[in-house]
Amino acid sequence: MLPIHHIENFLKFTPPHLQEVVLELRNIIAGIVPDAVEVVRWGGLSYFHAGRGGIVSAGICQIGLHKDHVRLAFIHGAFLPDPRHLLEGMPKYKRFIRLESYNDAPWDDLKELISASSKLDPRSIKAQG
Image (cartoon, rainbow, N blue to C red; front, side, top):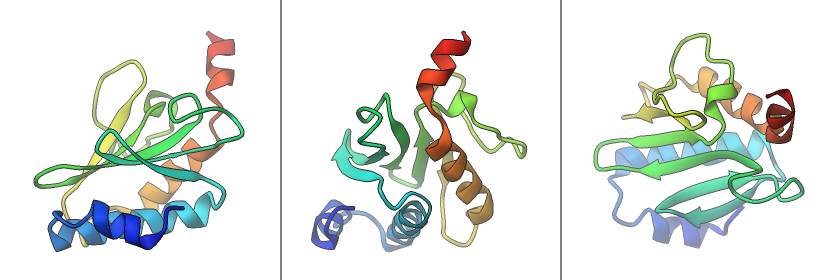
């Protein structure tokens, strides 16, 4: 994970109520995937398994900052279990969830999505079709 001063710099123009969401997501990701690589890319924080590939091929999730919400995105989200239908987006692969406040975030569901994404090996998807 990146040093906290990098994260503070990244978040310096983000409203405090959205900073809380980002920091909690980072804590969850670190707890579920302690060996995940964290980088600042494309205006957000990206997490991936270095041993499997890069940000896209081995992507776990991305935290994107928007004016009024935080977006937790999954590059291979179309292949994740989503029984509560929380994920938005219709692309072939990438799906996301909007998080507008700490108190309204479905934390347990987010943990399940992050865990499922961390276990997903996109190479198995290609092999299946």
